[in-house]
Amino acid sequence: MKKYLAEFLGTFVLALAVGLSLAGTFPIPTPVVAALTLMVCVYTLGAISGAHFNPAISIGLLAIRKINLRTAIEYVIAQFAGAGLAKFVTTVYIAMPAPEVRDTIPTFAAEALGTFWLAVGVCSVVLGKAPGPAAGLTIGGSLLMAITLALPGSNGVLNPAVALGIGSLSVAYIVSPLVGAVAAMFAYSFIARDDEKTAP
Image (cartoon, rainbow, N blue to C red; front, side):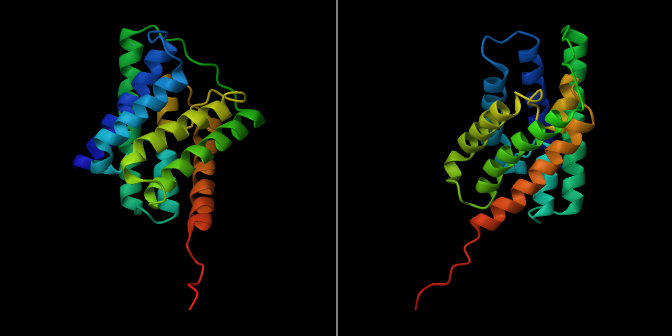
């Protein structure tokens, strides 16, 4: 139960921070807010749940068999619940304008590409290729880079739960992150695999 609460709390905080930033209450850019928030959540909650905070990441890790189906489903439920609460808080207490949402080819491509690079960062930590103490920096930095890559073509959400939390939910913001994350997990698992034979 504790790991699902951690996923709920982490996704809630991430979606809320992004929502507050979009509402104009923070003096720093939203991508930086998102990256710093995710970094802190990885360090504070990662040891409890693995710090997914994103349905696309959970589905990606399911695809490469790093979590089982039941855990993936329960994580996704917890993540959407956390983001839903964040949406409720921002709707009730803050007049946050909903971002423009378009299901266009550039949107699909941008969200998939951005999520791909976020998932590469996550996968590097999961597979032990990034130093453990730097997990938060690796994943937070990956998110910042991923949003930067995605913003020219989309809202740079890269997370279906956060898309719900900020009112940017649509087909593109659900499907594209899933495609990007699964592709990244398989690609990184392949290139990170140590299958070279040791010389006699």
